[in-house]
Amino acid sequence: MAWFFLFIAGLGEVGFVIFMKLSNNFKKLNYSILCIISGWISFYLLSKALKTIPVGTGYSIWTGIGAAGSVIIGMIFFNESRDRKRIFFISLVVLSVLGLKLISPH
Image 1 (cartoon, rainbow, N blue to C red):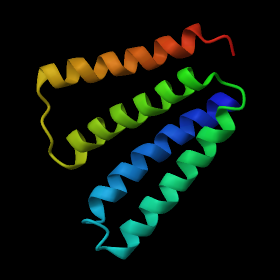
Image 2 (spheres, helix red, strand yellow; image 1 turned 30 degrees about the horizontal axis):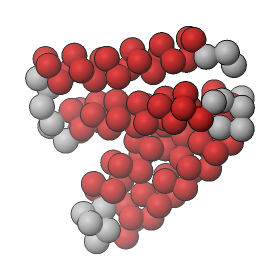
Image 3 (cartoon, rainbow, N blue to C red; image 1 turned 90 degrees about the vertical axis):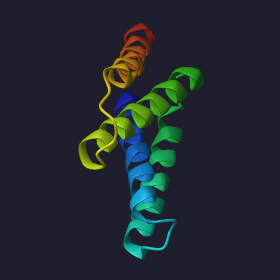
Image 4 (cartoon, helix red, strand yellow; image 1 turned 120 degrees about the vertical axis):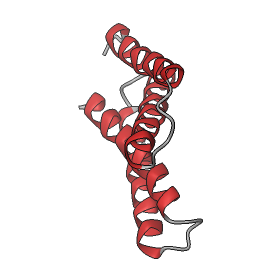
């Protein structure tokens, strides 16, 4: 269950960042509220996951999901660069997250 919590926490991190961008410096109330809720859910589920998963592994995977997810959402919805080098390096982040999961004892 801890890995499920960690995965959802990572998605919450993506939501946190995306809603922060959409809030326009917290000037748009609806997106500001969604940002706060996503951040709270993300941190809460991360704390639940870290009861079982080692902190270094959990934090690395959480930030990896957040970073990769934010870049991918940015490319799809905010017309951010889809340069091959950028895709290559974000792929390394994804592979690193998968590698940490595969070698983790839990």
